[in-house]
Image (cartoon, rainbow, N blue to C red; front, side, top):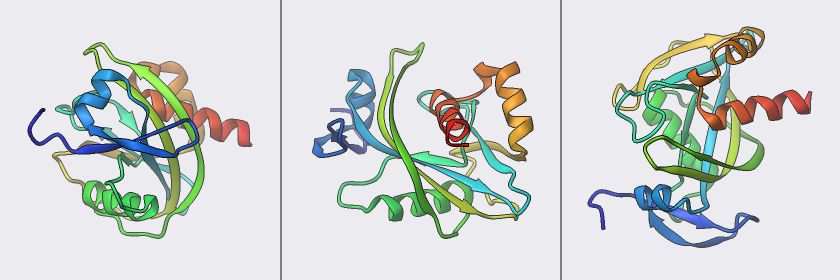
Length: 172
């Protein structure tokens, strides 16, 4: 077992908990596990993006949604999303669940993300207080400019974030 490998919650395709596994092992084996993503919008409806720290175990340096992680066993999803948003971005605001989806993406380093991702949204218009162990940079961007940049530079963004944006587009 890998030391300091936090547990993720394994789930079936209906998000029923079926066990736990070390985070790295789950990503090595491509095991379906519970995750969440947070999208923060400012008062102009711009999205707050984070650039993942370059030392992340996958997708380091890529732009993505405001915050994402895995809930701890026994921790409510909403509480987990709020905790991680505070830890990564220094933001403490109410969040609401928007939708969920399952996605699978393989990376060049041999790891696979296979997640049941719960998406939460909230509002915040100030400057975040980023945790530089987790976040390399941040920016607010209009949805229109984000869509243009994803079309022009798709490899600059995480796979799950591009799926979230597609889902938002389909929802209208």
